[in-house]
Length: 127
Image 1 (cartoon, one colour):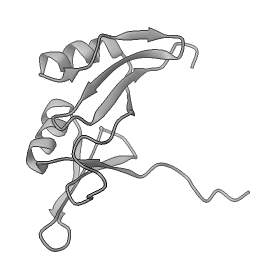
Image 2 (image 1 turned 90 degrees about the horizontal axis):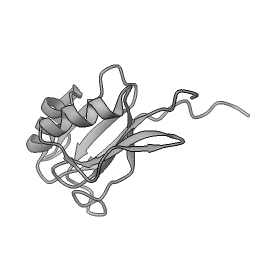
Image 3 (image 1 turned 90 degrees about the vertical axis):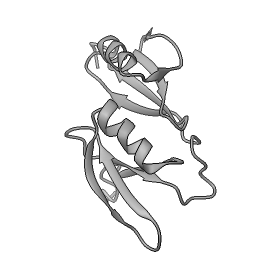
């Protein structure tokens, strides 16, 4: 079988206010800006990514079928879920629970300002 698909490139994140969302992802979570510029008539393309990440996110406002806050279950790797939880909680991130320890890893769930759901995931030592 040919290797037609090589990696996840981009995920669209529906937001109400691009500037507010960009500030959260860049200033609070530490994402890098990869691009911010015009995208067609009256639209703006904002593409961000965690440092050193190949996959990016695009902050979108134009998909009727994707209202702000409708994306959930996105997972971000972290080497230390407990430390990330404490640091981000101090920065004002809204977590939906405490840090969980499961056989598949240590995690903490949070939402962005629009309610999109994310999970910080620390892989278990055996992974």
